[in-house]
Length: 171
Image (cartoon, rainbow, N blue to C red; front, side, top):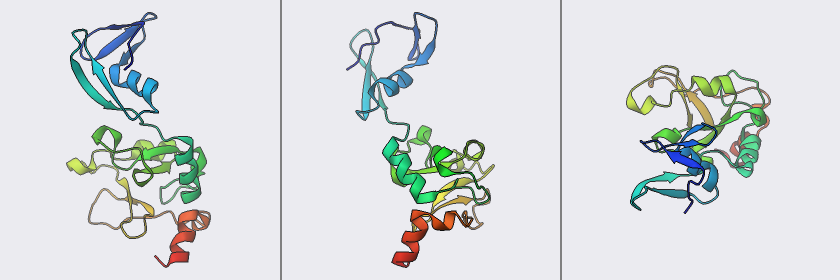
């Protein structure tokens, strides 16, 4: 349990600090309880208000594994180094996606921004990142879901841990 000391409740689960900064209760819980998994928020009448998942951002271990796994941004035409990228949720965090290795990939900022988080709701605007169901390789699904997944086949991507494992195990 965490008290929201120094924060004033302003309705609809929003808090305001003494310096005027406004933050949603879920963001405060995410920040303060990231190592614990879930946080329950109680109101001033000691009633539970909501339950939040708290680990939205990839930890250092996950980022290191993803970097070795990909080496480059997941976009098929990108040559930006994965270690400089953003950890992207394949199933969007806002849609219930977990922060685990099966649901994460690394993309550069511009390609992460173009991803369609709401593709499952029939909104196919820019395409989205998916894992190949046979070998786990990350790829980009074009906006037209009938089109094939496209992979980053740059020479450096071919030297990634995932590419090695696919060749080694014949996947």
